[in-house]
Length: 384
Image (cartoon, rainbow, N blue to C red; front, side):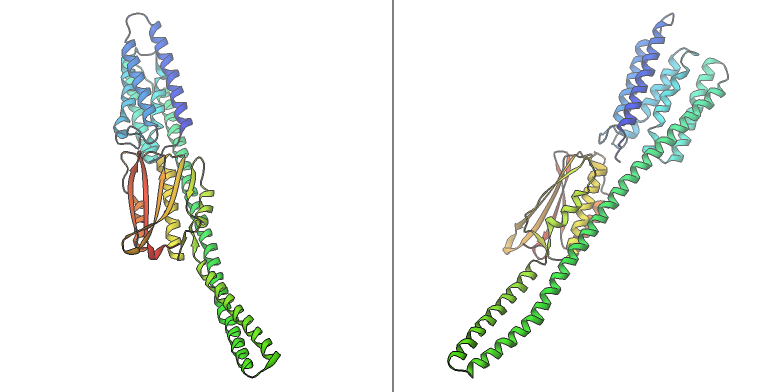
């Protein structure tokens, strides 16, 4: 899970600071001995745990290994402060539980978050009513409405973020398909032109060469010299046509750098993608190009959603193997951090399946805390 709400985090921290400062100020002005130190520690634990929970790619974040356990700490601290403080002086402390319920939409559905918020409100104001020995149903209703409003708004923000991520992924997919279609069209057009040159122009030039050879046998003197010159020109022209056809067929492969360039130009900020691919490196088939484009697209999408990286590098090299064989090695590395609780999901499974169809393999490494993907394709599927 990837949480991207720095403004919400800042708003929660600022609100916590205001509530804490006001609480400690009122507490110090009350007569008698008050639990200032204990309340201060509890409020600090609340703020620290809330900040950790809202960090990205941290073991204590909501998506981290300990996030689901740490989630309950700020709520328990808030209840402890409520019980320790004198009644009738700190009704506003319910703001702490409002801050807490804003975390719920990131780990559960909106319905579950609303139900849990309602339970928290009921328990909170039941304790307050018992401590103050008075009915608080009006206050409970008002604060309960604030709790529900906070959950609904945070759910909407979360849904919007997920929709933006899905839209970005679809946009990358569309760009990949468009670029592949253009490359395939160019390849097909080159092949068609090369075939027509060979079949039509080559055939007529061959026939012309034969006719000139026959004419050379039946002429003498200056006429024979002119015919021989024409025969030489016809043979030269036929050789040029054959070289042109061969060249067009040789360059009909799909250039890897040209295929990936439009894809990385449409990557959302702040991620920057760097290509390190030899200009002559190409792919021999549209099928392989399609699979490779989808693999790179999936890698970029995973980086955007999970790694919180600002830079992604794609390096391609053609490396020798045993028995004079070669393979294409495509390495994708970012400067993000992999969550400790990451699991093998549908994205990586799909990448592995695509590579299996191409006869390739996927290797995953940990590079300075970030995930590095290494795609390897054998020689018959990638050549220079």
